[in-house]
Length: 478
Ligand code: ADP
Image (cartoon, rainbow, N blue to C red; front, top):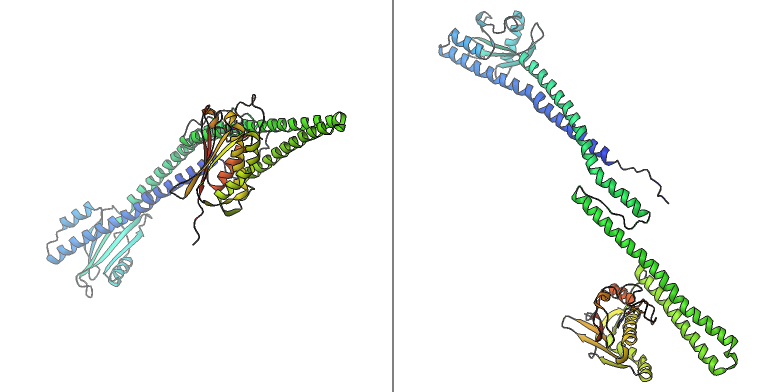
């Protein structure tokens, strides 16, 4: 069934890229505006003010030293595009130069205005008056007025005036240019973000398509993340995940097939022997006992299998918790070996046990029992004609000990060793008669993992196998 397409709240990639580009363009424009338009006016006016100061200084110096000539003033006025007006203390014009051909403020205003400007200069703390005042053509001009001689009893006044018309027209040009650059940036931004979004989206869309196929159960689907390192890694990860899902799927199918097969075998036997008791051996106590014993054995096998399945599923799902207690492993192994005494006497198995005096561990005793029984039972089951099983606990210097369970059986092939601890794995599946549940080693693996103990196997064909686990000594109590 196709998964329902959900409406997502998060913005899509294309829109996000566009939003970020728009923010970027807007920031560039604001910065350009501030840098070129706003600061240009300020810089221009500051430059003009500095020129006023320079010119005024030269004129005042010339006046006080008596070296000032009309040519010097004309030259200064010409160079700096300024109108100059010098008045004596009574307001009579001493010198005048109109650089702006009638657009000058000081040459085209009334005496009262000039008097007011003079007064402003006298009133200002440093005896200089700056102002921006429009002329009769409504063009803003910059005015500079200062006192000549003693500020308390002035000899006269110096007026300087320049037009800010060049600033206004330059500002207009810059504004148009910034606007033009803005439009260009906008077109470029839309184009680039479209290409960028398309390029980034392409591998992601391919991966989504493949992931949908995977969702439908196609585990062989290929993930193509070509384009960027991140998408390549994503594609590889998904391909690995698909492989793992496929493995789990096969394992699940195998497990169901194996479990149902293993359940059916004892069930068939139980049914057959029960029918035999009913129809044939019911009256023959010897035969009946034999048949009933088979039924009991098969029932035990059945419940063993079901128990193993339950244990393993609990261990694998993490539902199983460790009940840690401290106990002497050596004493425990000796107890367990007591239960194999009957097997040794009846079937001729020989058990060689080598243990140190004591080795205290902190572990879940019931789960460690499962491990020991599984490993010893396997050694018994697979030891073959030699019928020898060696159980050795070797203490090491680093407060660990290695428990080795060795048999003299046919050994395990190198290729099989990798998979031997996997659920329901059996070597030479078809040929082998069923001895255990096929889950023993996976239970060993899960219990060891839960305890954080190391485990493994060494094996040589036709010589035997050694299954080992590494246990940590319980820390001494303070
Ligand atoms: P089983 O119930 O089949 O013994 P296990 O999980 O205990 O299941 O073991 C998995 C498989 O590993 C066995 O079927 C057997 O092929 C192999 N195996 C386990 N122990 C030994 C051993 N001591 N010698 C040889 N093969 C072994």
